[in-house]
Image 1 (tube, one colour):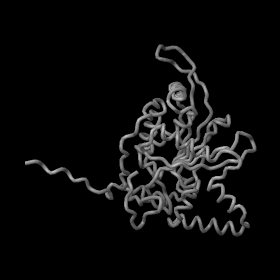
Image 2 (cartoon, rainbow, N blue to C red; image 1 turned 90 degrees about the vertical axis):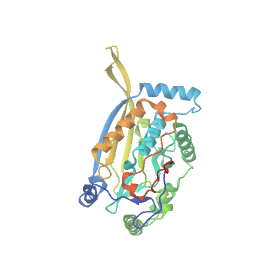
Image 3 (cartoon, helix red, strand yellow; image 1 turned 30 degrees about the vertical axis):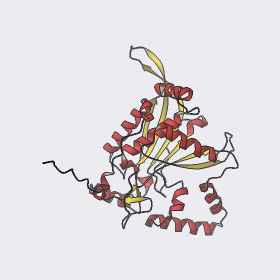
Image 4 (spheres, helix red, strand yellow; image 1 turned 135 degrees about the vertical axis):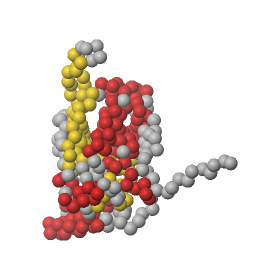
Length: 308
């Protein structure tokens, strides 16, 4: 992602955005909490072509453990890269554009009912291909699998949980105040599960349907995605016959204060196109566009001088 020089009013994890629409400047004052502003989006995706693609890549593409979840994450990376406004967040009643792309995923350390969960945060580039996303995810998940593995976020949670109640309340109050002002250190932002571009959960791996998950008031996460179990539905094929189709239910929760409805509509339209045709994810994306709220801060590109 293109890096800009930080100015007064920026945060260590983002740039201050001056929204061209005055409505977006006042919305955080009327809707102060993220859960006040969440909008729910539900879509059932036909995954017949996607599953065929996954099987082929497992056999011949050098990704033996590729899954639908990997493709979903890669499609989300491409979505965020090509639609930068969804990588914004509200904090301290101010609008920011995140200066990096990071996803948070909760995984089970082992597939048993009482197995503990662990948080994994993964940083991507907007131009990452499916192969690159697969390699980054595999490395991060391997490092956090097993009962003995412990992520930095797990360690911090254990440390806070060991504090007496009154101490914990005071520490949490200080952390919230520092986050509101944009003063949290980068080291804490890097391990916090509440500070990310997108939070994903694969509840389908537990054998249940998708859920609408709330957004967190604390932190900077403006989008949550829940992946449910696979299902089947009847549909009419090109020959007019009624056939069974494999489907996947996806549910998103988004913060309406960071972008308008039409922008979200175009964003999810392109995302669903990628899910239906994942071959596009095998090649690098085009150079990601700049957030329109930051274009005034980009260096001007001078036109070449005319040849006389």
